[in-house]
Image (cartoon, rainbow, N blue to C red):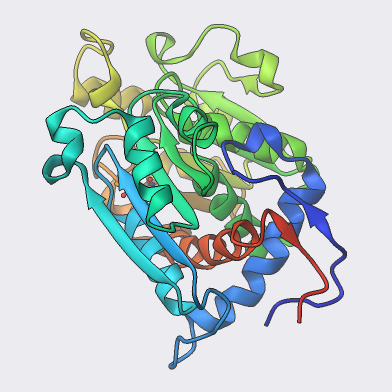
Length: 319
Ligand code: CP
């Protein structure tokens, strides 16, 4: 299941962002994930790769996909997975992030998966615990595991990245998914076009290598991949768009706009989707949508990451 011919590669103790990875490391994780996907689709989802390892999900923000896929990934590989519900833990009594992390260390935790509203929280935790830390989304900074599963989905369908046009449309300003995807896809050789209302486009984003389109039509035209993003109202301060109906009309994507893309375009979205706002229901459920496959691939990619980061961030020549 795990490709044995892959050479040794060192990732470090923690996965804090795509920024820390190079193209070869990203490809490497995608290779391991393709082996793991066989297990996700098998009738008997059991392997011994994480036997004796303990994984804790520490989520200070809501999640369905990321948290569950990490927990299932750990269980499919024979590991122990537990979740801390922040609202019923000692965090609610004022315990600091570092104290919570050190408490988990003392319980023998091998990996802490953290989601936090504050950019940089995973790094703070990683610097203060022995356990490996994986960033499951920090504020407006990064969501590296989402970008890796997105890259895996594109790789599986398109066979590579070089020269692909990828349009990312929506609330770029508040989106950690957009940032991690820009880093990943530009490193892998794709051209990333961004579209958002001016209030939701962060100034200077071109410095990442992404191209700011004049509008959603320009971004989508001729695209191989179109990725919609949710309006992150939980991170917005004050009104940034005049209204949802205007947003859907001028910046949302439906059949008509999607027809500007290539015929074999992949329609993606990290979820959760606000149907009728960023994407119409018809295209979410249409034949170009790979949104459900992204969810399945999320388990495979997180299995690959748990495998690598329970081995001290090293992979290769395994027994
Ligand atoms: N895409 C994503 O992060 O989804 P969840 O918020 O459900 O984890």
